[in-house]
Image: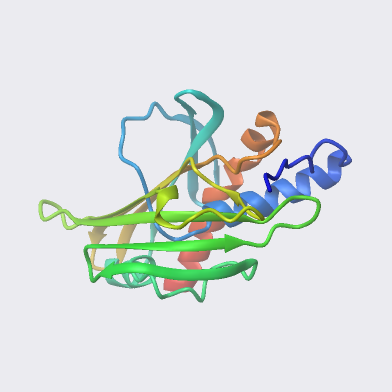
Length: 217
């Protein structure tokens, strides 16, 4: 049975904002990273030492986001947290199902997730392929991810997230400091107003990088 997601049509404004924030935190706090292409970034704000940017997205009214921060920690600590597909302790409790589909240590992996979304929205699922690149020129690590909806057959009771990518760049500055960059985009599908989405996404890199900072301090 085909699902038509009408949850946002009848919700009051305050409730819409709350649900949108939950959805976006779920979609963007996945610790992997994504698709590589040139972006034109516009500075939006700086919060908690994290610089936040947004960018127009090709063929979509929804925007991409970027966060950049210098952290007092080591590259190894950050990479251990971000580069291990089975390290799920920092993932949101609303993830109802998680499966590793393939894994090659320090090179690539793929996984499948089901997100439990508050009523009146339907749960979402996401299939992701991840590549890890070690840049020998400066010691940086790039973890890039993008959706591949064909990895797992669709479930008629779930809304499949198709347009998703993220990219983490871990750049060592010295033995005790790294520059951490997070770029990303996700179209959560369904009737979510683009203006509301674009208003909320500037908090995504702040929340995510702050969590990384706390866990690797």
